[in-house]
Length: 347
Ligand code: DAH
Image (cartoon, rainbow, N blue to C red):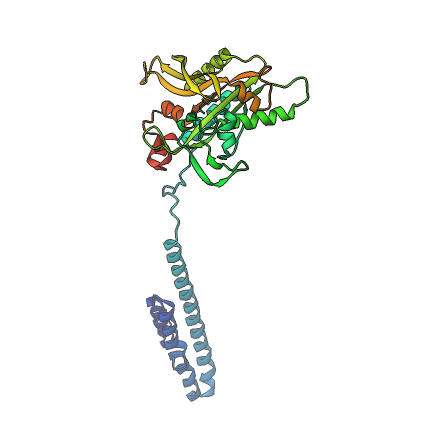
């Protein structure tokens, strides 16, 4: 082996021994740098006689190319190794289980409302929405509940520090009944002066407010008002509609309905509607689900209609109560605590 071949082997070995680009550059300098061994060889040419110089020069150049080739090869190998390392570090493990977003669900009260709307919708009832901050007139007076009448104290009302045109404080509506008046008035205005007025058939679900807070009362709760007014709408229609609703809502015929005489200023006669399941966990207990009655002639008048011609029924049911019975919830306040352990059961 010639000295030049040995040198090439030495260079290849040193390059191979490096493990970083910086080490490789240092090794390169030892051979090809200013004081490197190949450079020294080239300088040594000067001392040679002319005829040897040419042949030796050519050999050294071959050596130099060999070293450069080895260098390039090692550079590439180091770069490849580094890339491989980086790819490995940043690798995506597609076999890991995904992080799911967690799907939401409708609140049980929202679901109960949707059921109620669908069931009454199927019986031809419109669905109306109205203000939660009401005037004294719509919440009470129009419903035949005059100022200073003891019947007003049936509701522990929240008042808002703001007065209506009559100088009375606005209130957070204690029931959905004001919607009877609002809806019927608009209806009566639309058909004013015409011979024939289509019947009023509407439900108005929504939030209501009272100063109450225990296992079966929350200061904010939900009611659905129902109203059917026409020329010949009687209590038997109320019974048919309500029975149809309640059996559809609870998806069972195994229940009874009863009307228990009661008092509301806006109905005469008035009744509480109780239901009793004939099977299941609630079997045999009468449960109050709604107030109801035949709309009082004065209320019909306040709707802008003639009580000699128009008659009908109304009811106001507690949606939270219905949802509690349907989903087996024993504390109404759970609906509004926002506890996901409770709410996620309704997915
Ligand atoms: N508004 C009554 C309440 O909150 C419920 C009610 C009773 C509504 C009789 C009615 C009705 O429409 O006719 O207790």
